[in-house]
Length: 152
Image (tube, rainbow, N blue to C red):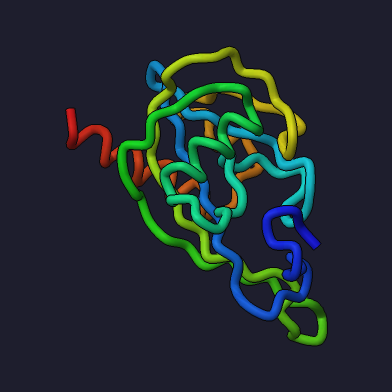
């Protein structure tokens, strides 16, 4: 059971859970966190987590980034929506998340991994190949970079 969804288990859920991820940019670098918990434990990813009842997607992203890394951000827009569905050997759905990824800009604070993040770094776009990123995470980061380039 989770604190945000006391009657819903993340493992073998009865419905998809809404997750929010943030692609945070600062001085041409993107924020990556190493996941401390399943799914994808140990992998580099975007900061994020479950949206709470009564919380907007943007507020959820800002809260999750603050809780995981100690920094403050301003959400600029939605990048994309991704389905993350993991099945067990029998084909049953082990995890099912609908992930809403947003692009955000750093607004303050010192990077200090906490909560669900085992580590956190500011990475250059050209260095992403050196991190164990899920294919969709890499795609979302690059898509957000193109979005920012068009906005400038």
